[in-house]
Amino acid sequence: MILNQADVTLFESLGEPGQRRACLVLYSGEDPGRRFTIDGERLLIGRAADAGAQIDNPAISRHHAEARQDGQQVLLRDLDSANGTFVNDRRLQGVVTLKDGDLVRVGDLLLKFYEGHSLDALLHDRIYRLATVDAGTAVFTKKYLLDSLQRAMQRARRSGRALALVCLDLDHFKRVNDDHGHNAGDLVLREAAAALQGAVRSSDIVGRIGGEEFAIVLPDTDLAGATALAERMRDAIAGQRYEIETAGGRRLLRQTASLGVALFAPTMRNARDLLGAADALLYEAKRQRRNRVCA
Image (spheres, rainbow, N blue to C red):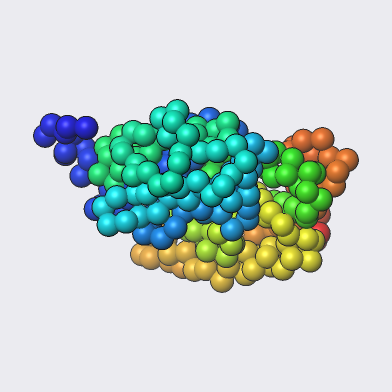
């Protein structure tokens, strides 16, 4: 791809050089637009939990293929998968060097390869983030969270492994807006979300489901583990100090949260069933004077 000066200016505005890494972007299946960065080490593609590009699809082997950085090049090889790996519709034999724009098919799913200098990759990433990330808090949107929860429930139903969901609401948040204005409210909301993200694991999915309410999907987590994680989230938000600007100068606020923890049960039909169970426990925590976890 040849860039003109306008492209270069836009390219520079979209990301620092250290962020420009080669990647594979999922173009089909249940989560189109998902991006897997190839960052120096081996990127394992497959269904297994240790896969950096974990894709839950029955047509894909547990360890299906791998992409590996070799200097400025990215090499791809199949790992004796059942259904094969294809590059631009040619079945992969041995190792191939990927080129910008190559189409990679694993099982019946399609991915597209972008080199680290690709303007298309950065534009795609920006568009994907706009569609899936809540602008006010930098956590996932409600739609993305519900879609992810539905897929996690399907996996749990098939595998029999535990799945938990936490619903969290910031206590008395309306007072922050009423007493200090919406700018202060936005700051508290944003920093509480950051504290929340810092308390969870990389495998957990944090989303904003409305106003000051969040939900967190906890894969492979039983009730005891989910309750312990919820307590860690509660501590992280309560331990944060929120510095706001007032007419009288800077002021430090404290913020607490109430949380409900529910476990997936096979009788639950869809994501809203599990969300409703966790939400009911959240409101039980509020009835018990807030700043607590109910499970």
